[in-house]
Image 1 (tube, rainbow, N blue to C red):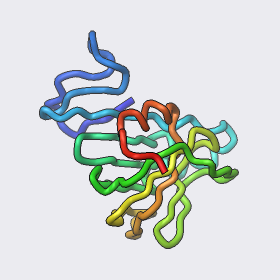
Image 2: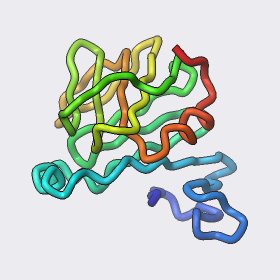
Image 3: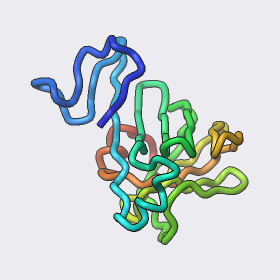
Length: 153
């Protein structure tokens, strides 16, 4: 489920004794959280954006969020001020945002919300965007929030 740009990875989720989605990479713990699979009808619409390559990777220093080729952000972990389950109800799927508030999801369930200060930078369809609030859909939001371990809103 996770991808590494470097062949120095000492193990992966399939290695004996490893927790699913956790690997050591250059003495740095990397945890990958899956975004839920989209509904089959929606998946056809998202095929252009390569949504099947949606990942959320958390290291000791950085949170990296990718939605295929359409959206990417690297957020310094120290800039994430709050994280909590998101009460937002949405019917949209994909990457949507305006003035620093972004929704990046492959499902309408399992949403978490992150407050970022100072604001981070990302890219949507190649254009630079600001991030102050990020809403994410995750397959296991409880595990993500526990691993991130910052104050709830």
